[in-house]
Length: 317
Ligand code: ADP
Ligand code: MG
Image (tube, rainbow, N blue to C red; front, side, top):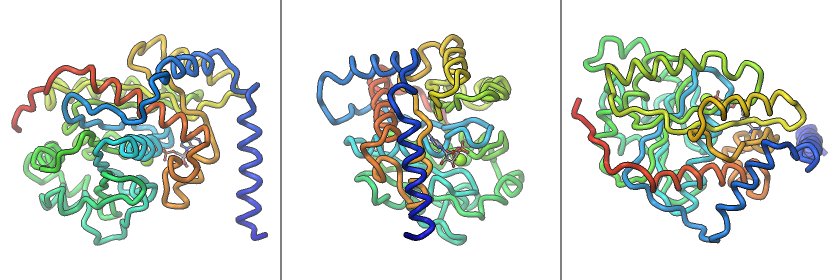
């Protein structure tokens, strides 16, 4: 057995240990499971199309809270269930591109050229093999310079919004994965989006910095994108062994109410292993708790998409 095999086996044993029912039998997880059971009685496996194309920006300036993991798994889940999805990787680290198994070495047509050289999205988007009707605009390391290069570009905050407005492909969802900062790239994503999805990690410092993010979103709303709203909060990396996870989850629910999806994404080794294989957990281990909960999150997201207001005015910029 190679060292890698051994590591993988140890991890999988640990993962199973973490997943014993007793440890996940907490009020938070019971409530989530109950809500999920109620919804799943219809047995239809196709997700409904949204009232209009949804441009959802996945943002949280904290690193490591599950932005990329959520972008990758939600997009694959939505696409696997009949919806047409475009992922825009807006992080120079290119983690979403990696997780979707998309080429993103320096020089590959990418979001950098879209933002800086006004390359049409169609010319940078590539099909993702993991699911039908899923495309990704990759991010290469070239994007690292974009924060600075964009400063002198015309309408620098509106570059992504304009590119999306000109995108002719009839997709149902566009998910934009943000870098862990509140710089010009994230501003572009917030100006481009109709909605913000904020992943919140069920851990101690999770709420720190959230106020700053919400203030920034308010600023963008008043100055650059009047239609922007925080539509969705997703609790991620829930660890049933710590009381703290429950407290954080409860606090977030008290504060954000309906915005918080019922389902909670547990911490699971399978989820973190998948990108190493250029895959989402949806394809890497479809039966795992990580995959099942991301499936549920995608389903909730899609259900909410049917109860939205008709097409919001997209003022020209
Ligand atoms: P962000 O994009 O916000 O920086 P990531 O999605 O990259 O965060 O997640 C940070 C790290 O945590 C990654 O290594 C990822 O694989 C891991 N991770 C994310 N979600 C989970 C989860 N539910 N269980 C276990 N590990 C996770
Ligand atoms: Mg990321």
